[in-house]
Amino acid sequence: MNALPPRIPVTRGQIERVVKHFYAAVRTDDVLGPLFNGILSKDPEIWRTHEAKIANFWANAILHERSYDGNPMLVHSGISALDPTMFTNWLALFDKTLSDQLPADLALQWSTLAHRIGRGLRFGVESAHHSIGPPILR
Ligand code: HEM
Image 1 (cartoon, rainbow, N blue to C red):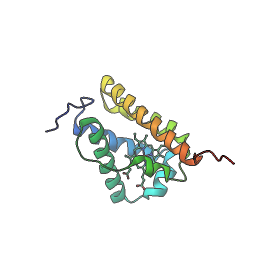
Image 2: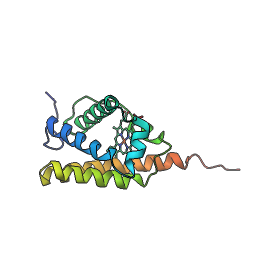
Image 3: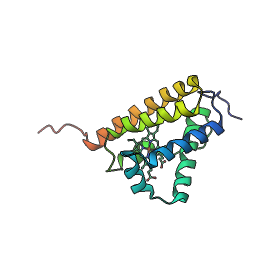
């Protein structure tokens, strides 16, 4: 039992369904597919592990399960093939999956959270690409 109420009233089952449908769409997406298939390969076992990790990420963020303790900022900043404009594609596909799989009010709440996290990640990736550091004073 978690001490805090869910941030959004979705179930674990709904999270797993959204994740499964989202990555099924990612795999065949013209822009995102090649990048994901290049890193995760087409091995179904690797995809199952990835999807389980992402379901844990969302269950952690939404249901306050202590199921994920990774560092998405570090992971995404380290993907050299990731162009920041791909966040627009990722979020559009995620929104489509949410509205296909969930009632409208839940889809909207989850979308708002995804866009907030996505903005933060995109900013981190852009900063890493431009290697923003301290000013050179001489
Ligand atoms: C441009 C958009 C994105 C691309 C191309 C992308 C791509 C990837 C890839 C290829 C991985 C697997 C890395 C590996 O296992 O080596 C990954 C991991 C992950 N992604 Fe994304 N991603 C994107 C946006 C997002 C967004 C918006 C979120 C959250 C809302 C997210 C959450 C995660 C998480 C939690 C992981 C697991 C990190 C870990 O290993 O702990 N991603 N992503």
